[in-house]
Image 1 (cartoon, helix red, strand yellow):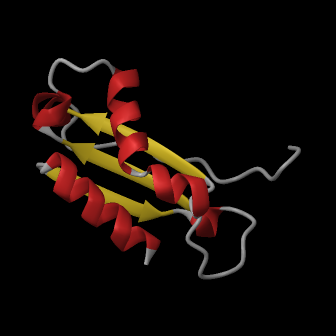
Image 2 (cartoon, helix red, strand yellow):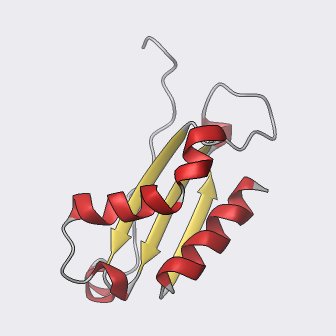
Image 3 (tube, rainbow, N blue to C red):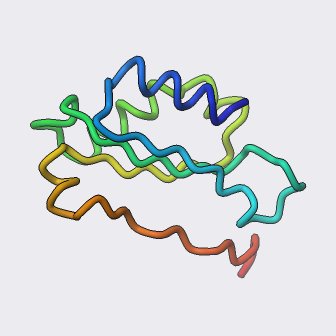
Length: 102
């Protein structure tokens, strides 16, 4: 449900060339079926001439309600189409959770 909301909002706001929303909650110490940890990979013309911090702010603003209520962690990878092509369509892998105090 949360994953679908993220996909819908980001699609409507950014008209992405590519969008991947991965529920990575299974990598963390949460109950099975949780939707609390996500990785977003988004490629959009909206990021042209935007610095990385500006891009992240745009995504965070778009998901403001979900971040305040449902999402515990959000990994954001934003690219222009050229940047995405230069990276050959590959985004960084997320590390497994090491636990709260490790």
